Image (tube, rainbow, N blue to C red):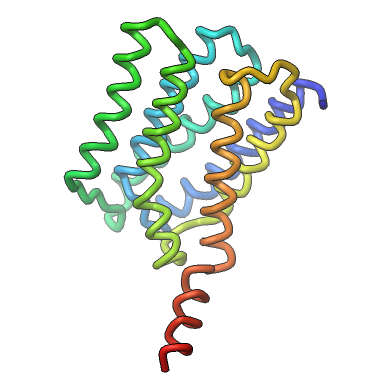
Length: 201
């Protein structure tokens, strides 16, 4: 295990990655799906509050950054006319899960349940962006996902108490960001689709 002080370094790297996406959003280079990014801001906020409640400590800084960067991007997306917000029945469902997580946490006082439902809500919120990254990787910026992955990886390396409250959200963020980073950076969806078309022809 490495020192918890590295968590601060991870948070700085994550913020740097967020700035890259933020700038591209303001310039119109990226097209953030506001549904995903809003819920990516909300779900980590729930998990962060629950982690603080469970006494997680400095490790929770990673979860805070997981929600802070998306919040800035949601705000910036209103400056970028190319950003879009497509509301469907499933989008409302994703939002309902996030709200449900808050209600369960408040009613039961059980932080682990709130963290679980926050991860579930965040995962559902990720679906539109995962699909978009698969089909149109040029509309995304891989940098923010790379640095968020590094941040969560550093956080996992600092964990000394392997309770659900400590490891669950960082592990989830690592897996999610690794997936989206690979889809955007290496254009995996485009490559897969081109191979499928060749095989059909």
